[in-house]
Length: 177
Image (cartoon, rainbow, N blue to C red; front, side):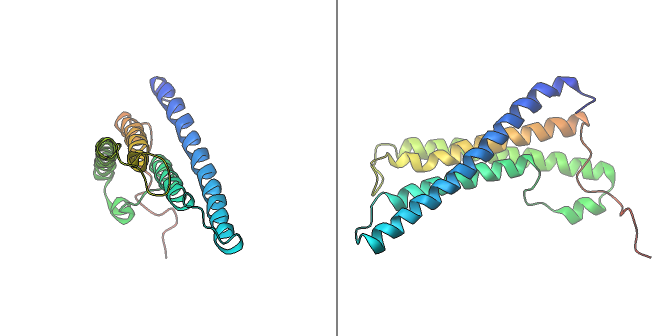
């Protein structure tokens, strides 16, 4: 990024969003653990299982999984065909990285758009066990998908600008004798 100062504001914004998503994800995991603990206490100690704990825990889990997945996309920790990158010639590797970013960005955008459609289509129904609209269940798809698309866009811009070397080296530094 040092060669392209125009990309710094995008990098700062996306970095802030990534850190925020990671913190929210971690807080959601801790909160979900507390909710499930309360459900166990309610069921086995108080002999009265709270009805809201399961749907709330599942909602939290959806958020922290999708926000964490988005951060994984930004950090390039998502699934990939690393062996293909390893053996590809540099121009092919660059093309593969760009194609990956475009495909992941499209996937994230589709998640966000169709997640929004699902949320709005089910908003009038109520969730079982908790007094929230059913559409709330699909909002993690919107947030996670939008972040996946944004983080992929950042990587695409970096790759197109040549600001970052492809993640997998072409040759091993110390070949086996």
